[in-house]
Image (cartoon, rainbow, N blue to C red; front, side, top):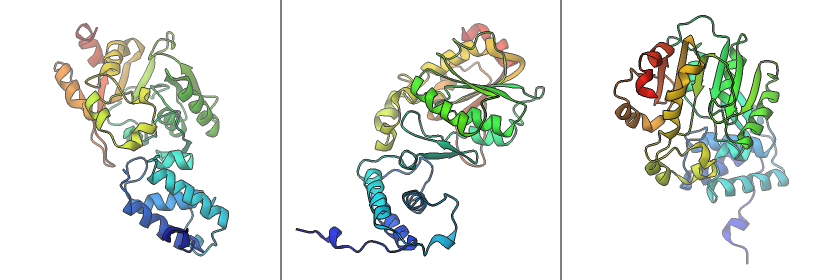
Length: 305
């Protein structure tokens, strides 16, 4: 026997499809935070993806017809988003970071770091050394941070480093997507273990930093992301401690370390009260990113080892 949902007439054009998608998303209990913060923006991206329309489509597409196969695709995507709580970028296969598109799937976490703003602002005012020529994206995931830096700063050579070979495979695809093979390489490395004698002007890292309590209470969407890229011990600082202990050996004398630790920033301050962390403010939102210069690390090196 057909239910009311089965009898509902399918949308005939994009405008109607958007209305249906927004209504279903609004009525659901999904969590927004992987690329959008509201039902309308998610509806737009899902509808455009399901119908094979460009992500930058304007109002001229609103009257376009919705075919039966396209409607089926949209229904399937809405089901996965609402019932399975799959984050939007894993459904569309694309994530945006620093104004650039990246291939995105469950091999790596979804790009959302406020470090994008740092890159777009030329690393200023925090980096004050010579024009940077080498950058390390440590715990790179799909590579968005290092690749965005290489895209906007043509004088940079970039190393993308990650422990997870699946994430590195995705990063390799994104290197090719942006045609940056000449200046960017992906290295399978446990933090700095495989970078050799390299020295970097900039080390940027969005490492795992979620503490055990936050991990247990995260919305269901986060559990589609690799746990290896999120969890970092009871206080969220297991990886960050190792970065602090080793980073000096891989920075140039005028170099800068920038690390995102999110909600674990208070635990970090408590664990290292002697370190002169500079906590960055962001116009576009975000928190929990610190800067330390090579000189800072040198001055406190004995206490970090």
